[in-house]
Image 1 (spheres, helix red, strand yellow):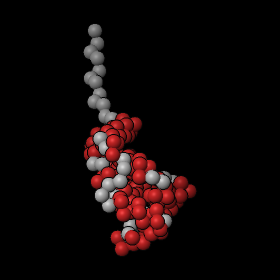
Image 2 (cartoon, rainbow, N blue to C red; image 1 turned 120 degrees about the vertical axis):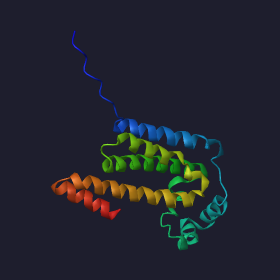
Image 3 (cartoon, rainbow, N blue to C red; image 1 turned 45 degrees about the vertical axis):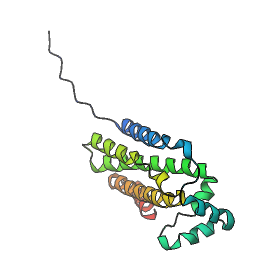
Image 4 (cartoon, one colour; image 1 turned 90 degrees about the vertical axis):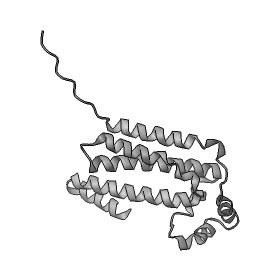
Length: 171
């Protein structure tokens, strides 16, 4: 009887890492679902938006270097929608952390998945006012997406490389 070949150690694939980040982000968000109303500084932010429109919110945060701050009420339409929008951006950031780290650490998919899950654990979308969270998480999304596109461009060839590089720079 022939000996069986030794089992190869398995590492999580990209799908497993994305699933882990999504589960952790959803679980972190789920702890706060019962309170999707207004928090702390959300009250003045939504008052400014409702009485003066998105431009009033942008003017309110103008000195804080937060260019995306006026988008949240326009995109979400309500406090609950804002929290859901922020949860989606936070989960997308966790996925981008995974994608970037898998490019940077190609031999360490488990470490990349763990780092993405650790990022997803911290539910920063509820701790800050939602318009500030969008400015932070939304800006981080653009930065991570730009970084990931740049890393993918390194392996590209010809027109694909040029397109990915341009997209990375434009973000």
